[in-house]
Length: 409
Image 1 (cartoon, helix red, strand yellow):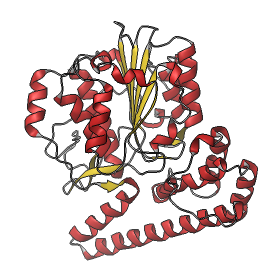
Image 2 (image 1 turned 180 degrees about the vertical axis):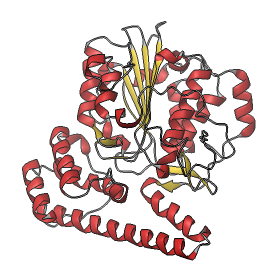
Image 3 (image 1 turned 90 degrees about the vertical axis):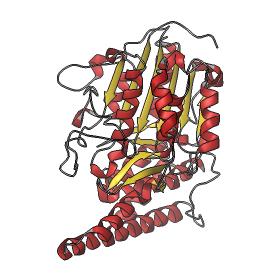
């Protein structure tokens, strides 16, 4: 595919909030520093993050966010384009397609004002489930994301678009992405997989990064991007990732395009310094296990007996909640599809799933059974593949919703 000389636009999104999800905002802040140092002007970068980490009461280094052990402060200078309650899937889609009128926020409404000769690079980091990418109080549905991309392509709003997504089951978000629209997507995990957190920090008592994100950014910061293509980077991800398996979708011809077309180039001084430091990921942990691991560490290191008992109580309650979620999902599945086994969903063909029907089912489960936006119910997201499988196997949304309501009553 030919490479154009238009502007490079970038959209960076961290969909989570709270200290336990530190790594997602750290990922996005690090990505901003990369784009900024490469020469992309701030007026062509849109950043969405809740912004409750840098000055959080649990942060021992106020105003500081790092994305690797002993790393630089990646929070410095990050634009506050969308923060707090303005971090919504609706605002994300509106900003992506350059529709200021659809943005719901006070103050400036920064959007991707791209044209037909421009490139767009989108990076999102948070929790996810089959067909879903989570936001602080809502979620982005695969159906809505694909619809927006399709509309933008038909309106000639870009020459090429690349999307990187860090979340569990992120491969399920792009099964309907057409190869004809010059859009290329790379995900942290297959449709049936969890993504992995890394770098547990014993002082901050949380994880600093995610495996997929740490690896793609390391590749960017250690290579001459004029001589490296997206296919080269994907090959690197396939060779080096240990937890999950990166996937790619859409227009594969973009894989042959130099990364510099989207991200300009990494300064040689940065390349040399990053290569010298190397990359050694530690504490690889499935994302849905992160809350348990954090509590286990806090219990082991706490010295106050009263606080230990309180932490043990939280840990036991978390396990009880997980068991309740598992029982509920199993009951719904077996009543909708007698004889079905609630496995992890590996090998399921989600391309047959009606994304709109699944969106309706997922929202009903969230509002009727377990609202995964509440920290104690976050584990419910890891079971959404069960309902996606029911939809893929032809069970009507009306029937699934009826059973959900009955089981939860």
